[in-house]
Structures are given as C-alpha cells and as structure tokens.
Length: 319
Image (cartoon, rainbow, N blue to C red; front, side):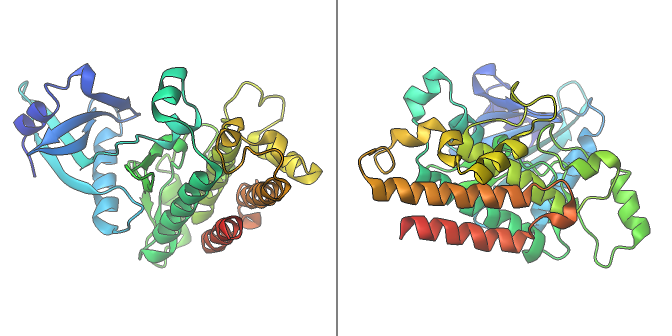
C-alpha cells in the first residue's frame, strides 16, 4: 500500500498534464511510482456511491488473475492534506490507451496512433471474449462486469486487450436465492447508456447475459465504427437493429468501419479472394454480435459459446 504523499508525488500534484480520463466515480492520472509507469485512479469520495465503488473494485480485482484483465499494483487508503479521506487504486499503465480512442480517433490521434486493421480487431475481440468468459465461468462465484464498453477496454504496447474498470462489478453469490438476486437488482445497477442491457432498466437482477448484451454492442461498434449513441440511432433504430438489417441483406461490407480498408491486408480491391474472406469474416462477426445483443436475455448466446465462436471466426480468417 502507498501513501497519499506517494500518489501526490507520482502524479505531480494531480497535474492536468497527467490527466488520462474522468469517470462517474473518479479521475485517472498517469504517474510514476518507483520508476514504474502507472495509471492512478483517484476516487471522488464526495460523489455518492464512490466509496462503495472503491470497495467493489478492490474485491473484484482481488479475486481475478487473467492475462486479459488489467493488473492492479497497489492501493492507497489514507488522508489528504485537508484531513479528508482519500482512496486510490494504482494499475499498470496501458501505453495505447483505450479501444475507444482507436475506434473513434480524432485527426491528431489518427495521425499519431494510426488505425486498426481487421486482424488487429479480431485479436482484440478474442482477448475481450476470453476475459469475459473467465469472469463468468472461470471465477467462483462468477463476476459480472456490468460496464463493458470500448473506453473500459485498454490496450497494451503490443495491442493486447486488458479489460478494466470494475467499479460497478457484481459478484454473484453461490446458490443465490431469488431474494438475494432481488436485492442485487435493488442496489441500483447502472451501466452506460447504449451498452447497458435493457432488462436492467426494468429492475431485473444482474446476470452474465447482461454482460453478453454489452459485449455484443461493443463488438458491433468495434467493427462498424459506429457508437450506439450516434445521432442516427433514433425513432426506434438502434445499433443492434442496424447491424442485424445489414447482416440479413448481405450488406456487411457497407457498414464496416472504413478505416479497416486503409490496411494492406484488406484494401486490394482487385484481390477477390481477400475481399471474399473479409466479407465472410464480417458477416460471421455481425451474426455473432446480433445473437449476443438480443433484447431478451434467454435469446442471447452464452459467454462460453460466444468465446468459442469468436475464436473460430478469427482462425478462419487468418487460415
């Protein structure tokens, strides 16, 4: 465990120059602790629910060990110089930031960081579903992330996935009764607009199928470059329906992120074999995404089936 002064020094006094991002319950800074580059998540304890978020994230991260999940280095539970409670978590720093920045790059970041090829997106997607499959089926009891979205998917130097932000994660108790499941739902489960499973808005308890819904939406966004909160999605049109319609009509190439075609592996319009492979791959991905993001939980794929299918899609494309 580190002290408040350690965190203060590591972030250069919480300098704006070191600001990486802000969330519902806190702010993330870049910092250096003992010559180790780190991401420091400082919780805003004045925000209702922030202290609980700190405890929940600590508990969830204490239970997990997986190559595709963000690694916690240490934490800080202290008092600041004003005599107020202070809480922070210290993680390994992800040099390539979040998936969100790569899917929706501004001009400056696109020139600096580049864009994602189809094969890179497939690798990231496989890592992502493996991480969620581990949380759901490799942990006892299961852990429900509850806030899957591109900004919570971080990328290492070699573009491997690290799923982060377990601030509203829920641990499903073994042999949970209907009463305990109901109490879980009454705790105010919230995800992010556009990604949260529709049944959570109706007060139903958290489940692995809620994460599967968010996974499906995130994957659609990853391969189409369209955010579920884009202005075009109104009057009943959603990202899920948009993808489903393209899949049914065979127009998956038209909805694919145009940045995919900037890469050599996919941009040769004269190579009919490459075009055919890319189209088959995208069609399979869209079908998988649609099955993950069905409105009714019972109609969605299981996490393990989604992981197996995502591996098969990538292997078929790269073979």
